[in-house]
Length: 201
Image (cartoon, rainbow, N blue to C red; front, side, top):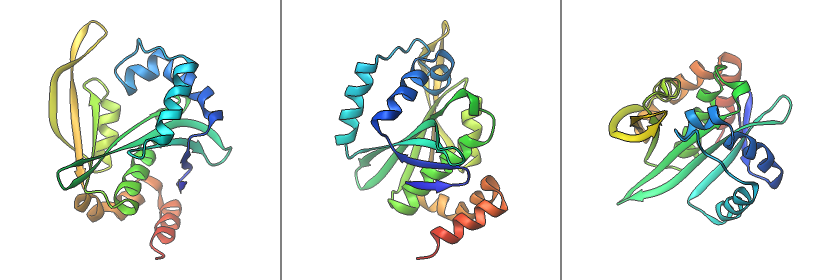
């Protein structure tokens, strides 16, 4: 579990599948999180996926919870991979629509970067985002990611082909800006509390 700002990232539990079922069958949520608005997932499929993910050590899956009321508001994931000697974490997240445009996406992304680099000692993080999801691009770039590639016309959504953008950030790049970004994104009080807590060792 990681608490940062107004949210915590914790492990999935069976009770969360009800929320995930609603999010993953919501047209607009999937339009922006996966570029697959026609997505339809049954509860049986989610249960099977949940059982598989629990056994998969290469997939660190979290529920995003609002600390104030312990309400589940989204999901986050770090998919671990090795490219030669480079340890990579591919990150992804989505939020309940009620919490869009409140800056929470930046806090979740910051949390995933801290987990990846400050706690798991990965070498690199990357992320993919469909061309029209400009809000996600801004979130990634505001946390230090660089857009370093394009998979041209690799998605088909809403009657046309779209590019998928590839973003990445290296461990040394993140560590050089870590405390600055924490202060920018969390605000003074929450930032100092979090920095003090994580720098105790």
